[in-house]
Image 1 (cartoon, helix red, strand yellow):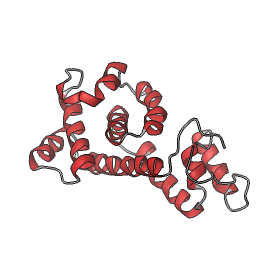
Image 2 (tube, rainbow, N blue to C red):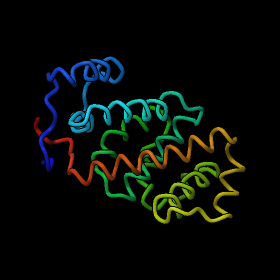
Image 3 (cartoon, rainbow, N blue to C red):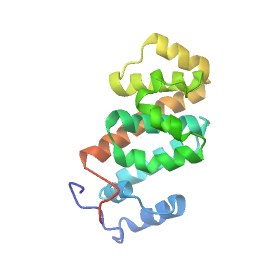
Image 4 (cartoon, rainbow, N blue to C red):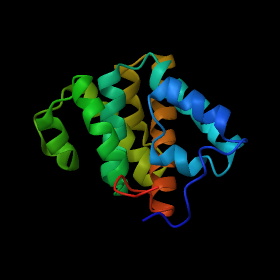
Length: 174
């Protein structure tokens, strides 16, 4: 159960943003129901995450591996539940999802995926990225994708921290 109430989606201040979220995402997930308690924050969040998810040149399967790995590291079940189906649609295998907690010992990830996952781990666990980890990821993606990858890792760390601090879960009732 969430630690504070979800926003009133019919309130005059939230309604235009609710309509936009429905148009762009199909429904208003619990994450956005909570964010709508602060409409300007919800709007900025929507713009940022839309850029990450829909306007990035980073291959979608890599993006989803990053999101799922962040969810695993941070113990964010809502984030994982929301993104597992997307990851599978984008080409991540169930075997890869099953091995994300031990990806460094798994043979189910190629060299690019391993470089991206190492980068994700460094950013998420330690903030600073060691030079050797950075060098491997730089060999694997172009500069634009490196910026997009870094923003994706940062963004989904923000998401998981928000979700867990406010205890937002998929089984919550509004």
